[in-house]
Length: 332
Picture 1: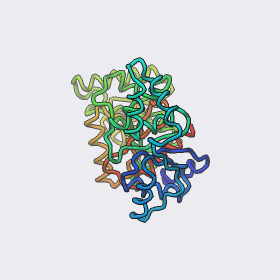
Picture 2: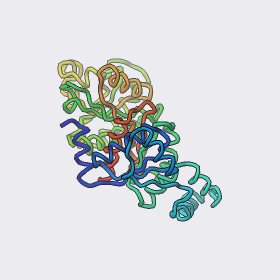
Picture 3: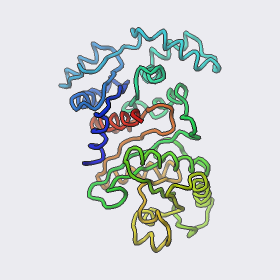
Picture 4: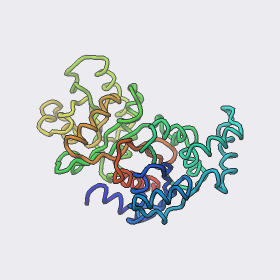
């Protein structure tokens, strides 16, 4: 079974309630049809019921199995308004402001559903920016206990590939933190290892990537990755983690043995930590487009509730995959 087929099977084993706030996007409706037909999750679509059903009919999609909620008419609106005021009172949130936010932003409403335990997870971003998707989560759900930093990752599945875990990798951070410092990079490495183990169900082997391998180049950017590696090793001594490593040294056994002899990670990495957002974003898109890989994400880690972002270039099948992953995260 492919990675995503395994994830779907796990999602079906204990169905979770996933919110899709972008009901105005036809890809969302197409994905909802597929999720419901496959029995991956229970769905909540946010928006005007008449418009959603009309659009779905035009597209030839059946979303009648989803629960449709219009935030303006929701019986839970007053409860959510009170909850948001309480959560944001230190920021001066008023009842009128909370009501306006919750009735004008489906994402805020959906995140409050998670906070109030009326839903288990949320998937958005097909037609909204990462900031629009994650800001409500950070304000309402906040960070998971014991987590220093919220970050993002992709699950990348490369066809006909004998590297990684049968061609499956975690790439991080490719969508959120622009230029993490050494401490932040170490935190991203820890979270990414946990995400790999939980979703791929295999032992993570974490490579701290650079254009240098084990001191082959001198620069502040290299020093940052070296320091991050030291911090991550000290804080997670049980973790198979090494760096700094060039990409070929991380993935190709013969190169890893030559450039980093004695490393347990070099040549066998499955969890790739990029030094900054430029490298991560370019890296995953190169693999996705040139290797015809499936790239699921950007998924988030470190939030106290499963909320996942989508690329605005995503397909309906991408949304289905991220819904399945979000459902499995919610099971944990």
